Image 1 (tube, rainbow, N blue to C red):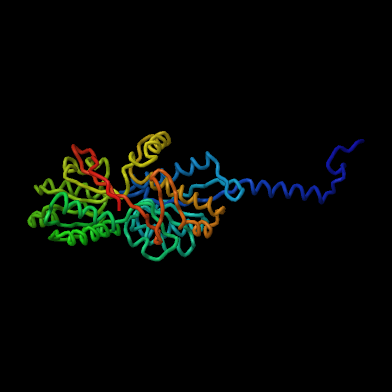
Image 2: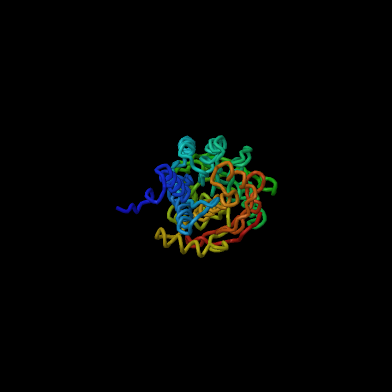
Length: 384
């Protein structure tokens, strides 16, 4: 009988084993699974913002996988490792350690400054790049961690912009300040207060609530007696909405200035008619004015069935920036990704992104909004 087999044609058993081993090795090289971590509060009062943040990162990863990604000659599939920190600093550190243990190559997150800052040391100790899409407290990138980056302007830009607007456009002479005692709310209020004083505005008071306060009548009654020209509130819309609503109910006629935590398109759902008393800032350009904003909106709606809220384009570009660093490094190893990050010059939904030596944007943008009949209306855009 004729032996029509590889062995029959002169290949030894050892040779056949070698071929199989090489084939297996080739298959292993053909596709590498690379984990990208993402953290935002998908439970708790800021969950709608957290889900929007998660959606932005998820969309980016799905699109990159669909297009195909090759790093160092090897096909790479990104695996999305999304975690919930509930906006709680203690849970944030636990989640950060979990992502380190999961051996992620980089992390998009966290969303809030109060979570981002404590988690950042864990990523720094592990040498894993962390790109926050939305943490604005300056302290995040002032710790000296080479792993810390953000794709949004800081409160050191946002707070002074609000103060300058109050002094130069509204022509106010006095202000009462309230913050929610979080790293975000307090940090924004402090930056606002410093610039307000520099602009010649008298700070009548600076009161503290919490991120769970919903009854502000005692603080607001005191403020009413102070008769400020304007109120500044540092916090999120879950508490800021009731704050401005109660201010109107108490007959306080002045505007409330606030940052991006309060600057939600549907603020009227929480504040009612009092939303029209709010002037707020967002650390970033209006989405539809971003270079690829309209296209992003269309793709986001198609994927998730509703419009983007706030942070999703920033989270989307955070993923793109990480993958861009991988491509330039020709590696998915955290250390090599980290080494490539300082030279970032990325063009995405947000426009051009470059980082300074601390990991902050070289060119930040602040947008200012008012509300007319409960609808958000753009006042202007300030480049910082």
